[in-house]
Length: 434
Ligand SMILES: NC(=O)c1ccc[n+]([C@@H]2O[C@H](COP(=O)([O-])OP(=O)(O)OC[C@H]3O[C@@H](n4cnc5c(N)ncnc54)[C@H](O)[C@@H]3O)[C@@H](O)[C@H]2O)c1
Image 1 (cartoon, helix red, strand yellow):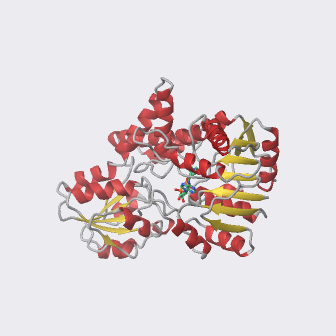
Image 2 (cartoon, helix red, strand yellow):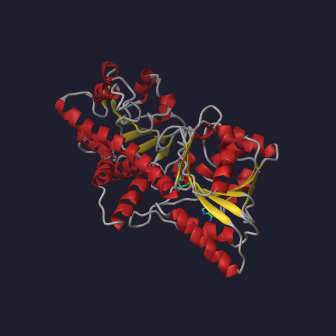
Image 3 (cartoon, helix red, strand yellow):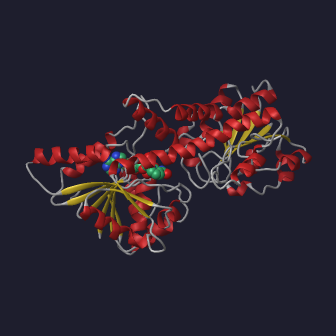
């Protein structure tokens, strides 16, 4: 099948590369000329494990190509453009509208438009109207359909999530579109039936509901962590205790220093705005969002409480991206911490295994960029683990201690054993543990 993908970011590029791997002929389109030029030269603009190999193999085989020029989509076109937060918290659909109008202005025949961007309920119908208006202005008429196919991949595991999805949600009531989608996803659906069919409105809602539930679990655990700390209980034990209940399950119950990324924060706000537009208030999600905003300040509060005065203190940050496995810095907790620590007069030494280039474009404060965690620790009064990259799991703390000026350690991801760290001489603080 000939597939056009509009938007070549984390979702679009992974989708394109995975469909190409299954033998389809995929063109990935983006308005970012530098990104497309890089991809044409074999340079992958984002870090995603396994993606480089996949893109190179399929480009070389002639199944995957990149362009900045809109052309008629052919049988099927995926939309994977950003839907960021507007000033009022709602999803900004201007990128989607522009992309759809650009596409409709060059369409020369029937096509199926599949929306992978996370969009408010009712957007498939809106896209249908945008296309209709554009075709009408052009004085042409083709049959087309708009399908909702929200994406559930996780950055850092995107390839395996796409290749072996927990589920494939397809929102359509058009039989021809359903047939095409079944064919397209057949290679990802061999082991057992993964497709869940529904109407487009429910498919759009499912994506928001999934992210809202996951964010709720995190904020729930973060809020309980604070109570555990006050009472002397240990949230790690509590997690095991409640996770063993099959109705609860132990996944996604890890407390930490707040969720970030390009999805949860904006999707929670967008869903709240959708509810508001319907005269409803989602009070659970109001709380989830509020708890998270406070949680992102927690590490700073702990560091400040420990030192009192931060002016002149040297603080090392291990990890900057919003989670391990990705270079994505969108809404990363590190950004909040860096801002607060800088304002308080601390000297910062930063290291992340993959997101330093992206971080350098976002962090304007004077900081020292380091080659590795050991270099970051030089002269540090405290180390803060912000992102739990695997390479931080087994650290030669004897070496780290030799570099440090004072042995304070703030573990934002509960990676280390408090007893061992304290036995090693650290003043060790984590989240919700004794
Ligand atoms: N990143 C994730 O983990 C993830 C997971 C599931 C769903 N989503 C959703 O998927 C959508 C895309 O997210 P992303 O993280 O891939 O975004 P991204 O910012 O990484 O990529 C989007 C790309 O679209 C391009 N673009 C913008 N306007 C365009 C236009 N008119 N024509 C062509 N290209 C255009 C941008 O240049 C950019 O390269 C969002 O709605 C997001 O919420 C993201």
